[in-house]
Image 1: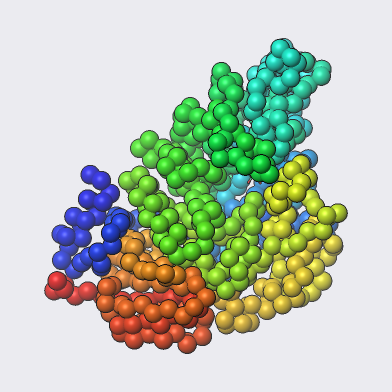
Image 2: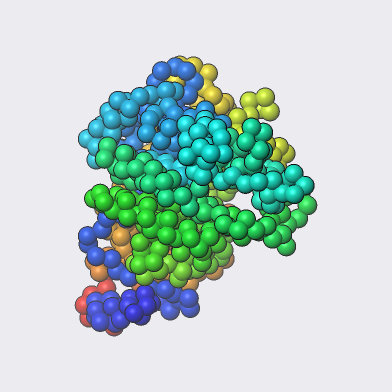
Length: 569
Ligand code: GLC
């Protein structure tokens, strides 16, 4: 039975329920049972460990620093911390080049520090997700050292080696995400190796069963220690074409775009064999209780949802980055939500993201006023939200002077504005030196407005962005309609985005004004207003009558509707 029919029948059968309005593209999302997994009702908070809190005064954040912030994290109201890589690494790509999957980088601390952090997070009811980087290792990983030592080495086939083309050049036209050819010549053994990213990040050969087994053991190592799951790096890239065919040109490529986009990565990404690899990763995680896999996947919706897997045996949360990529206007976003809800497989649980360490900060993309609206949308749409550290206090991109650039992508592909440093700057805790991040000049500059824009100041301001996020997270806990409820779009025009989240017990109506003009909304199509639960203004100034809502510029609200009585038509 399709998702649509299922829910429509449910609505018909239950007399207490009625169709809220006649939305032309409405997809009725199923009402979920009360036994939700923690990763469905919960909220994930991404920490970029280099930039969260520096406890040992070396300018780089660390695990003990994170441990010092746990009261803050718990009070914020999130459920799980996802830590970007903390493993030993030469840091060519700031930890996404792992030299030992079962250790902790000295700059971040020790395994003991990690276990201690885990104990302290558990004590506060929080969980930890680690970053699993299966596509590539560091070129300093002992596996690669062995692999490149000779053609006859038993680990030679753990990576992707290939003879040169007849002219001595790379075996085919495959390009690196970080600029130039993806093939690097190895003088000693007279072959090329493949790297999707930096040449310091050789790709593993996931067709080799020994690689698969070794990487499965990595998962078990951390699962046994007690982590709640993993965010998986570049999940859609793991398998490459075994016939090494050239990628076709991208017909939409325009001069001036990064070279990488000149091709359609048909033979290097999202290969059919990848699905089996993903299902096997899931099987390993399922050896343990209630753990989760979140997949980093930048693909169009119809391909993204394939990563839920056959019979939902893939990753539980294939990251949905659509809010990062869709123009910030109400009609585009309404269309996106419809398309996403419609594309989800039956039983597939949605998720939403507004920012991460690879993308510009939401406050810089949409402006400070709309960032509040964006926060409310993120935390009221159906599905698991992932927050990026600092977005809850409205941190914006920090301009990085040329001589302080750190990001290898920016260094490799200069002038294309690809740099990711601006969204990776130190967390702004208070107005003390280095914004309370630590006692040393930090590895990236601190925002110029950190004295006014920080946790300590926002903590005391009942109308701050931080107060808004705390209130939203609190409402998600109090109202199952927000965390687990069904979703129904509501017809709206112009700059308004509107939808209802509901359970059998309550209906919450969310309306967001994505424009800079005031706007009105007549409530009769959704019911009668009972009370205003929250406005992004946090000032009690919203004008709401039983039948009409008057929104100010850049205002979004959550309204409790009068519940339908059993006799409602
Ligand atoms: C992912 C990470 C990014 C990293 C890349 C290569 O996209 O999020 O930061 O550079 O993988 O590992």
